[in-house]
Image (cartoon, rainbow, N blue to C red; front, top):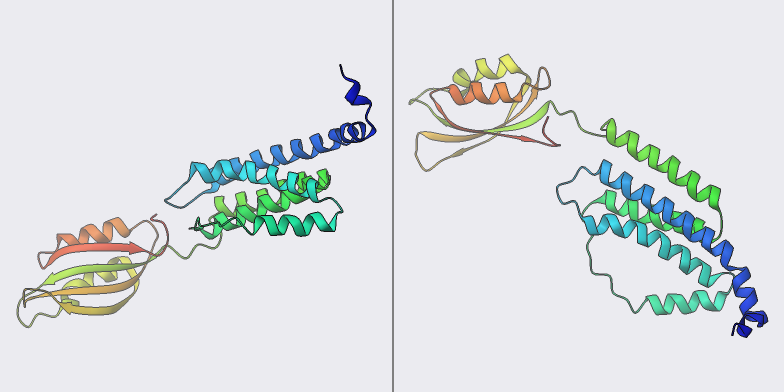
Length: 228
C-alpha cells in the first residue's frame, strides 16, 4: 500500500521535510511575535486587523518561497516572472506598516534558509527597538507647541493683542501671529497663533481661558502630534 515510499525521490523529499518543518515553525513563531508587536505599538487611527494577520502569513509564505528557490537560479527567475503577473494595489498608509512588511520579509528569508538563530534573534532585537521607541515616544515633536485658532469680535479700535495678550502670556512662552482673516461680520476676525506653552498639559486651561473672554466667539487648538 505504501510502496511509493520506497521511491528514492520520495525518500529524499521526506528527509528534507523535517528541516522545512523547522523553517516554517520558526517563521510562524516570529510572525506571531511581529503581529503582537504591531498590535501593541500601533499609534495611528486606521488599525487593520487584516494587515495584522497578514504579517504572520507573509513571514511563512516568504519562508516557503525561499525553500522553493533553494540554490536553483532558474527557479528564482521563474518565480520573479510569475510574481510579476500579480498586481498589488493596496496602498500602505503608514510608514510603520512598510517597516513591518520588510521586517516580516527579512525574517521569512532567514527562516526559509534555516538560519533559526538569526530569524529569532533578529525578531527579538528589532522588536525590542520598535517597542522601546513606541513606549518612549521617540522622535515626537515637543507637544507644548500648538496652533490656536479663534474668532475675535472686539469693539471698534480695540486691538486683539490688548485683550488676548494677558491670557496668552500667562500660559505661553512664545506667541506668534500666523494670520488674520476677516469673517462674515466686519467686526470679527479669524486669528491664528502659533504658541509654545510654558508647561505641558496646560492646553485645556488655555483654551477655556480664551473661550471665557467676551470678545472671543470660538477657539480651536491643533497639535502637530497626538494630543496630550
